Length: 559
Image 1 (tube, rainbow, N blue to C red):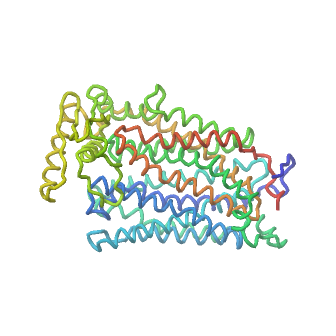
Image 2: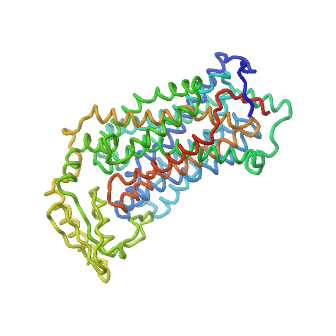
Image 3: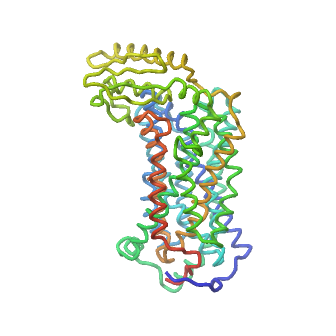
């Protein structure tokens, strides 16, 4: 990897090139808008397409359908990355945006479970997979395209505009959803939720027109004219150790940590305040939107700062700050503070009337039921499921073998039960009665069903959410330039796309589902944070020890 302190070999950016880069970024905003609509409406879509499941399982299933789009992203990176290195960045852009736009529109017109049965969730997940494949080919191309137009010592600044597109896409999706909620009122959860998906076809037309006006990357044109294009981008990227080791380091020492910080700051924060703190969806979306609006300029600031002091120091500092302030039950814990300011009644109830479940550990299973087929019949599993469904933290106490689970909320004790041997109707009746008794005890102990908006400290909530977004901008703003500079032009699209989408698609995209399951299993509402803490800390250590600074790399030197 050669470095250079001289002026970049290509000419300075022209007005036309800036226009093209703006068009590239605008198209990418649309793709992220499409992708995020599902995540923001996961609960409603779960009710539409998974109606035969219980609410908790339906929510997890909806999250998995959301995750399906992330799981396949690395495969999209391989397919479209290869095409981008073989035939060009521009044509690959056109293909990915058409797949993304068409899939999003079809989600909006797809009949629900009540209309066509099991075909509905199957088709839904298939469309999510197509979206994930398209997005897998999008980011590497956009980052590569912009970086190959940028001046030598301003790549962090120019590529940071691409980094804003994910957040702007999320912001746009939240605004459209809020507008549709206002327009359709109570009908939003019946049919109004479809409008944001359907109108995206108009955005598709605009974005497609813009991308048709784009010029090909000058670096790719130069390689093509000189006959230096890679004949086997996949082979060069992943079958040659000199490149494969850089791919691996990019994943574990850079992208994995960036991914969990990103998804904690923008997605898990939303899930936490709605599903755990019980803030109503409209208020929660407005709070997240405000934080995104305030924090988004940080992408440009930290991208530009990385041109001056280096990519590595900015990203590693962001990881460090995130790890320290994610830690639960510390004086500077952001998520503890969110509980304090968003639902103070819940904080008081957990302190004054702590809950415990005394169980026989041998009869407890992992509280994760993504398909809705698992039947919780032991007293331990039933008790944990009911408490998790009420977002009530509890401590598990080990009892003697054969112990029937007993819930204690403050001074109130509730005997659990086992549904083994009961008929379906008997189990349902017993379960309904048990849930009612537990809910009554929680009410008497002061555990709120919903957050009291009058008791919320809105400015402090927005401040805390903005801090989470700033961490996102620190780790994400400089990363496109960093990844581009790690690989030669001939295999850059392929090589950088795979670690990026494994990191963000798997480590990051699965974060909400994993964190939700960890909380349900352990009982502590903050337990899900240990997933991003551990991943970010590992990346911090590996990246600090083994990553090289790249801000002065000449990206044409290895061609």
